[in-house]
Image (cartoon, rainbow, N blue to C red; front, side):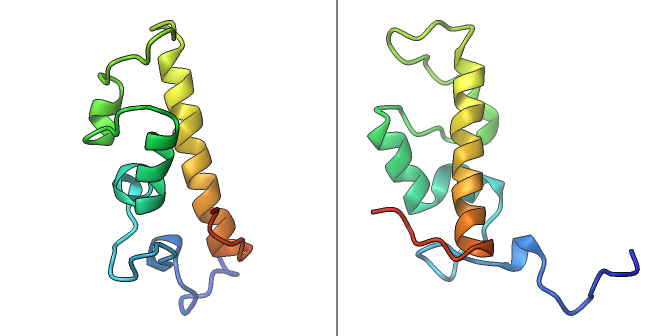
Length: 95
């Protein structure tokens, strides 16, 4: 694209994690970031070991196994959305 500036940082170069030495790839944002770890714990869900294994994670008690993929995707989306809000809008980290 003509309006693409080679000197501008790419999304994967923008680190917003509380650990500034961290490379923020998809696995980090969804699973390994301290914020993601806190979200999984607050939801009472076992933190997945990898994104690929997320779909094989034990379904939370009381949740229909057919709904789990949609719930998991919603969690991943909100983690990603929260990260982007911090990077692009300067939103603070949630308490």
